[in-house]
Length: 155
Image 1 (cartoon, helix red, strand yellow):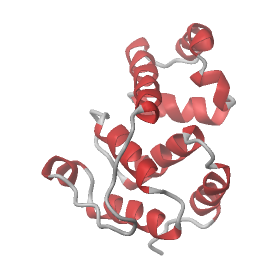
Image 2 (cartoon, rainbow, N blue to C red):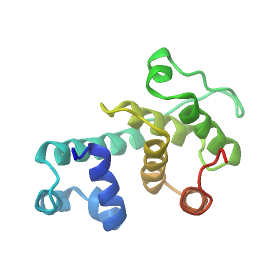
Image 3 (tube, rainbow, N blue to C red):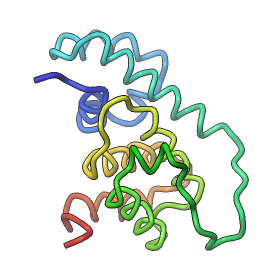
Image 4 (tube, rainbow, N blue to C red):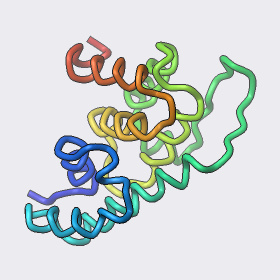
């Protein structure tokens, strides 16, 4: 089975504390551990680049329209994110789990993947973004409950 960047990110999320894989001083040790665990070096490097992009996104000022405005997806986003994926993001926003800033970071990080995006990948990216989103502990808890304990949002 070919391991993907998201597989590496999921492994980090499930096996390490948040600070362990975001701390750049610890990344070299983690890279060694991940390759020893069988992940390809190229995918490990891409995963850390993806995490660096997440950190950069958090530092960018984002300006949005009035609260409750509708997000229109660009053609490239529509091609990469299915109706189910886009619907899930809207659902999370309506529940108050994702704010407009977190939504944009999620979309940016999804678009950074070269592999196909499905609903499971969207859920994982949402978790990864929310664990890195300032002051989002409560929203992260709700998202985690929704994903792990309530199953598919559509059913």
